[in-house]
Image 1 (cartoon, each protein chain N blue to C red):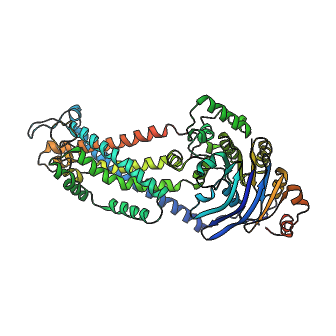
Image 2 (image 1 turned 180 degrees about the horizontal axis):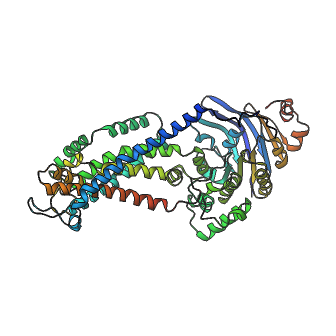
Image 3 (image 1 turned 90 degrees about the vertical axis):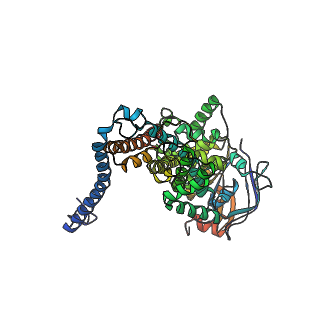
Length: 253
Length: 292
């Protein structure tokens, strides 16, 4: 089951450059929440702060309170590696491990975290590939083909399966469909819709129609601040802030 | 048919551009041929000169005293194998470790110092390394040995392997590392099982280049392994090596020894080719369809 996310006073820096300014946001469990905004507004940085990926960039740091379920993400003594095991992430560009087979790609998270049971691993790989709607396309070439040999859309679903295999509670998706064609995109969107039964999903997107299609809640970021956060319907029909309205009507960004 | 480009694409290409295109292609082909010719020439020449002295005895017997016909370089072939084995066992792990440090962990000063040192070490003449190992190990032990020879060659391997590993690791896109971090895989595990594995083809090529380079080294062995006319199974004793044997025989005044030197050189080249090919074959066997 998914868990909710509480963000209070989150600031993030790249060197001396303040990229996120005191963000407060509550992401409900088992729902899809979209994060929209123009390029460079901090939306990717925001989700990368949720699983402490942000700090893997040189000279980047973050401060504030992030609670994922009962877990204090920025608590003293919290191990970022443990956090990332419980919060899966799918990136903008499909990034399968190029030298690994399809099976090994999905199993990588389990195997490299010391999971050894072969039978259970087979089951988890199959379940994850079915969840990500890739199973039928790859079940005959699981061990023969490299993950990099798949098409872009398939690679992205492989990456989703890889994230799901470690059974996270939250799935962060950083523009998961922006490099894909419309058919692959609709497959991924359908998938996101399915996933919220088991997971809390936060999706960053450039595409406002996509946010409207998949998300129950939407947050609008601008210049590192969260301008407005509400039900998706509300954001797209009667936004409270003038800047949100300008953005969704295409006046800038 | 309507043509929105107004014929810009279908117009014939000018004679000048066609000529330039062909000149560039011809130059590239010529350069490629120039690379292959010396290697082929050396190999064919060695074959012609060396194959006469090459027989079963050459591969199985130790050298005969001057004046006696026959004998072989079996001890030198095995000795070379032992010395190169010791060198690879030390040089490759240290070199790869150093390359991993440079690519994945080094931040700031220490990284630059290590990188600079590796580049300088790469440029140190091999005979200087031989003398250094001689004074550091051979003089203290008071005898020559395969160990000291292996260490001298390992020192020559490290910078090549390290820099090749570093460059190959830096070519692995960062999103591969991020994918692993995102799964909650610790950094050391990511480096070993994901990044290094992704770069493995290039790293292996680097190791093979380093191996091929030291396999023919003579100078560092003169002061360390020293050479031996007899069988020696103890790596802590003076040991024969092909390059040394070739050197000794080639500067001797005897025709018989000259012929054997050619045969030795031929064997040395074949050994290098076989070793490199074997590593290539065994490591590429597991490659998957469509892997990049």
